[in-house]
Every structure is written in structure tokens, then in C-alpha cells.
Amino acid sequence: MEVSSLGGLSSALSQVDSRDAVGTAVLKKAMDIQAQNAMQLLEALPKIPSNPPNLGNSVDVRV
Image (cartoon, rainbow, N blue to C red; front, side):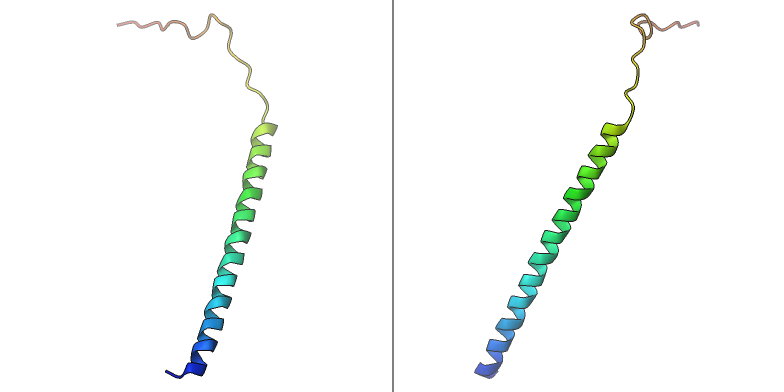
């Protein structure tokens, strides 16, 4: 292997590392945005009214 080709190889690997880092950062940002959107949707759901206190306290079982 020639010494001159090592410089080109090092440069190419550096570019690949940079592209991977940028791709990872973009993916993390997209996931954060999706998480925020999901939280907004969950918060927009109407509140479920609770049952009166006398419901659900006993079960009628007939054998």
C-alpha cells in the first residue's frame, strides 16, 4: 500500500463518520418531534368521567 493512498483513505473514513453523526442527530431530532406530537395527542383526549362511588364495589354471582 502506498503512503499517498493512506491519506485518501483517512479522509474518506472521516467523511463517513461525519455523515453517520449527522444522520444520527437528524434521527434523534425526528424521534423527539414524534414524541412531542404523541404527547399533544394524548393530552387532547377528553377526560373520562369516573363512575359513581357505588358502582364496581361488589359483584353479584349466582351459582
